[in-house]
Every structure is written in C-alpha cells, then in structure tokens.
Amino acid sequence: MRFLLVILLFLSLGLIAQSNNGLVREGNELYQQGKYELAQEKYREAQGKDEVDYELLYNQANTEFRQEKYDEAKSSFEEVVNGSDDQYLKQKTYHNLGNTLVKSQDLEGAKKAYQSSLKLNPQDAESRRNLMIINEMLKQQQQNEEQENKDNQDQENKEENQDKEGEGEDQKNKQDQEKSEDGDKNDQQEKGEQDKSDEEKKSESEESGEKGEEEKEGQQNVGEPKEGQISKMDAEQMLKDVEQNEDEIRKALLLQKMKGVERKEIDKEW
Image 1 (cartoon, rainbow, N blue to C red):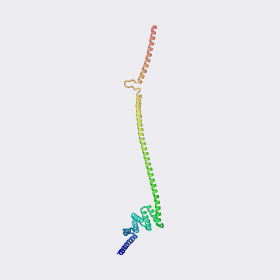
Image 2: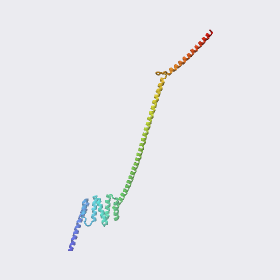
Image 3: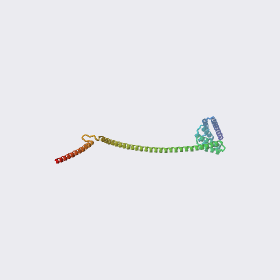
Image 4: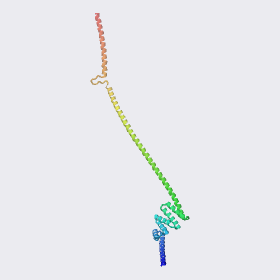
C-alpha cells in the first residue's frame, strides 16, 4: 500500500511538471510573437504556489519590461537576484535590471547593476558596453547640472543686480523728484519774489509817474494864475512897475524940490 502511494505521488508530480512545462512553452511562444501580456499570464500560471521558480520569475520580469511596466519589472528582477542561488541566472538578471533602471532614469542604480553583472561574468561584452555608456551619460549629466547651477547662479546674480539697479534708479528718481519739487518751490518762490518786485517797481513807477505828472502839470501851470491868486509873473511885473513908479516918484519929488529951491532963491532975490 505504501509503495502504491509513492507511485501515485510520483505520477502526480510528473503530471504537474508536464503541465508547467506546457505553460512555460506556451509562454515562450507568446513572448516570441510579441504577445507579452499573454506570455506573462502563462508564466504566472506556471509559477508554483509554495516555492518560487526564479527562472519563471525572470521570464515574467522580461514580459513586464517589454510592456514598459518598469516598476513591476524592477521589483521582479530584484526578487530574482536576492533569492536565486544560480549565478548564471543572477548575472543575466543584473544586466536586465540595469536596462530597466536606465528606462526609469536611475543612472546610478543602472551603473551598480551593470557592475554587479560584470563581477559575475567579466566577459559579458554587453554589460561592459552599457556600463561605458552609463558612465558617459553620468558625466554629461554632471556637466549639465553644473552648467544649470551656473546658469541659475548667473540668473540670480543678474536679477540681484537688476534689483540693485532698480533700487538705485528708484532712489535716483526719488532724489530727482525731490530736486524737481525743491526746484519748483524755488521757482515759485523766485517767481513770487519777482512778481512782488515787479509789483513794487510798478507801484514805484506809477508813483513816479504820478509825481512826474504833478511836476509836469506844475511846470505847465507856472505863470498861469489860479482863481483868486496872482501869478508869479504878474507879481514880478507889479514889483517892477512899483519900483519904476517909485523911481519916477523920487525923480518927480527931486525935481519938485529943486524947483521949490529955485523959486525960493528967486523969491529971496526979490
């Protein structure tokens, strides 16, 4: 009875292996046809529930990579390198993990993956070539970052200088405005003083004009008698007339005296 049980167990294991092999073959055929999603389903279906088949998981990771499911592929490849003891399988997996990380823009991670692949197989030309490409990409990336940092610094310096120039310009405009306002005030003050001076000059001119007119009128009115008054010329003429009359009177009196004397003398002779 025990022998029969062992025979039946081996028969069941053989049927399972044949079934899994059939699924794996179907998956491989679908993979070659580019039907990666169907191939992935076959590999998952063939995968055992109790123990992980890392070769099937490797194939499954490749179908995920082909479908551009890079996060899923990365997780599956990492599970293979961390769980499998097969050095050949691990070396191939490191190489494909490097390719996956390149697609994910993780160049540093890809570099480490290719280096791990070469440690397991230094003769792998593809891993070596990819590593050289990655090193060039990293170098270019570093140069780009340095140039970007320099450009950013230059831009910051430029903006800072522009801000300083703007502040200086604002300060200059403010000072110019203050000067302009002071100039306007001075102009207004000078204008006010000038207007005041002009008014004073005008007033003095008017007063001078009035005085001139009065003097002119006074000069024009000299010799013209005012009502109830004797003019200067009349007064002078009258004075001359009086003096002339006085002279004539004195002469007449003198003559009269002389005549009187003569008569007396005549009378005396008589």
